[in-house]
Every structure is written in C-alpha cells, then in structure tokens.
Amino acid sequence: MKYLIYIFIFFGITISFGQNNLEDQYEAIEEKVIEWRRDFHQNPELSNREFKTAEKIAKHLKSLGLEVQTGVAHTGVVALLKGKQSGMVIALRADIDALPVTERNNLAFKSEVKTTFLNTETGVMHACGHDTHIAILMGVAEILSNNKDKINGTVKFIFQPAEEGPPPGEEGGAKLMIKEGVLENPKVDAIFGLHINSQTPVGTIKYKTQGIMAAVERFTIHVKGKQTHGSQPWSGVDPILISAKIIDGLQTIISREAKLIEEAAVITVGKITSGTRFNIIPESAEMIGTLRTLNPEMKTLIVKRMHEMVETIAKAYGGSATITFENFTAITYNNPELVNNMLPSLKKVAGEKNVTIMKATTGGEDFSYFQEVIPGFYFFVGGMTPGAVESFPHHTPDFTIDEDGLLLGVKALTQITFDFLNN
Image (tube, rainbow, N blue to C red; front, side, top):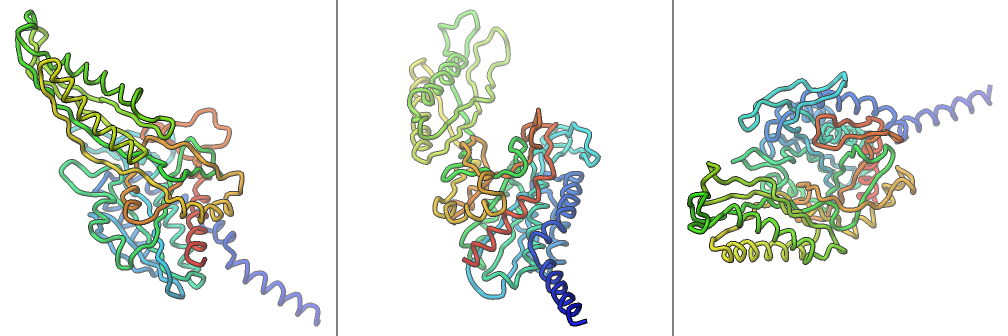
C-alpha cells in the first residue's frame, strides 16, 4: 500500500508538471491557431477597414484578462500583459490587413470576398500571410497569459492595420500607431516581429543582422518639353525622348555608382504617361517608379544622383524635369546587439541547424518605422512544405502557406519573450 501511495504521488506531480509544460501547451494550442488562421483567411479585410478582424482579436484578448485598447490607428488592437514583477517592456507585433487580390486555389476556406478598390472590382485575399501572423500572435498571447507568473516585466501585443499601406488620402499603419503613442505608456524597450514565408521550408527560421528589408520610395518625374507636329520634331522638344534618356541614365546609377558589394539597390520605372495622338509630340510626360535601398548612406547618395541626373539630362535635350519622392517604408533594420542576444532563443525552439542567415530582400515592411524609434528584430518563419516542387510567391492569387509552420512562429515569439524579460 505504501508503494502505491508513492506511485500515486509521483504520477500526480508528473501530471501537474505536464500541464504547465510549454511543449504540452504548444501542442494544445496548435489546432486553435490553425482554426483562427482559417477564419481570418476566409474573411479578409483591406487596409484601414479591418473592422471584424479587430473585433475577433479584441474578443480573444479580453477573454485572456488582458488590458485591451481598440481603435488604435483606426482599426488596430493593443493589449497589455503584466507579469508577476515589474521589469522591461517588450512589444510583439502582427499585421492584420489583406490585399486586393482575387484568390485562385482550391482551399476549403478560400476567400470569396469581393470589393471595389480604386474604382476596380476585385477579390480580397490574405495573399501575404498576415492571417497567419494574427493567429500566431493570438496563440502567443494565450500561452503567455497562462504563464504570467513566470514573467518579469510587461508584454505589449500590437495588432497593426494597414501594413500594405493606407488607402490614398488616409493615414495608417505603423507610422500612425507610433504617432498615437503605441510605443509609450508603458514605454517599450524592444520590439519583435515575424513574417511567414511561402518559399522557406517549414521548421526553419531565417534572419539577417542590420538591413533585412529595403527602404521603399515612390518617385514621380515630371518632364516638360515643347509640343509640336510629329512630322517636325525640330520645332519642338520631345518629352518622350527625354524620358527614355532619363530612364537609361538612372540605371547607370545602379550599375556604375552604387556599391553593390555592400548592399543591393533597385531603381524601377513602373509607369510612363505621355501624349494623346500618334502624330503629335506632346508637351509633357510623367514617370512613376520605385527606389529600393538597404543602406542609409547608399540611399542618400542615390537620391542625390537621381535629382542631378533627371534635371541635367532634361536640360541637355532642351527641356526641364523635376523629381519628387514619397517614402513608403524605412529600412527594416535589425539591431545587431538585439539579434545577437536573442538568437539563442530562436535556436532553442527551431534547432541550431534550422536557424540560418539570409540575404537581404528588396521588399519593404513598415515594421521598419518601429525600428527607427526603438531596437527591433524581424525574422522569417518557414511556410513552405519541405520538398515541395513549386511554391507561389507572396501577393499572388495562388499564394498558399503550409499550416505546419505556424506553431514554430508561436514558439519563437513566446521563447523570445521569456528570455528577453527574464534575463
């Protein structure tokens, strides 16, 4: 009988400990995370219009007993979790908006949502994985809430709208959240974010110190010439010819002046508008394009040279031209010290060999604005089925994610939080 009592006590302790074990909690929450993701995927909402998405997020966070604030930067949701003792403040961020893309796959939970975007009928789709980011962070919030007695400090959960950019004429995204004080009260010491990636195998994490994603600038060039009959070009100044020379000249900045052995840079002219008839040399032309840079000094040099080249080339051909820039994102810059300190956390959950350095990408991410204010670390989590023959890029109708990759995202942000606040 005595030995049976000992066995009972032993198993009682084991069961009690098992319920509090993180691995058991991860296993228990995985199905919920996938269910949340599918719901958000089937009901996507565009930037600054994430009303129902925000309601679902807020409802879950309130059920966890967190302090919840809604309506931040229009539709954002922010929640606070306070640990057993005071300490540092960490922020975890997930973006929540979808894209004007018509989904084209056979998923049982595919989006059938339709809308009008910029006067064009289109579908709405989570074609960049933001649905997975929401679900991952909701899972992290639940696990951390169940273990707040093990946390020294405060966790701020930031569910950010309009990462893809607010509609024309509106403010939104990370910039507006910062403007409204999301990094204050309490003041955040460091921020972390992740992005699922359809071309990175499930079970792996990729990162880069310093610039991991590019600063994105939209530029507009106005060229002024002199209108004349198409049969008499000598009596006018051709803005289309000038535009062609400017486009050609801009590419030499990248191929001959940018120090590409340090970081990549891209200049792309995506649209040119000019003229009304085949036999008229028009008076003006407009070009719109994008500049992508990963190094602040390189960005300053390229912008300076673009101004000089646009104005000088136009003048050389008898016309005039101006160029203006509109900033869309800053450089997504991973603080080297923060990366170095938190890498062991990622390796702890993914395994040493599954956490690897990546090349920078010329895509942009407005998480970068948070990083301009406080130290931040942004990394990529695998969402591609290992061994898959084909995987579709983000922002495309066929984009899909292997849901087996979601749990690693939950583990990564959870482990980072424990280690950052408790060490």
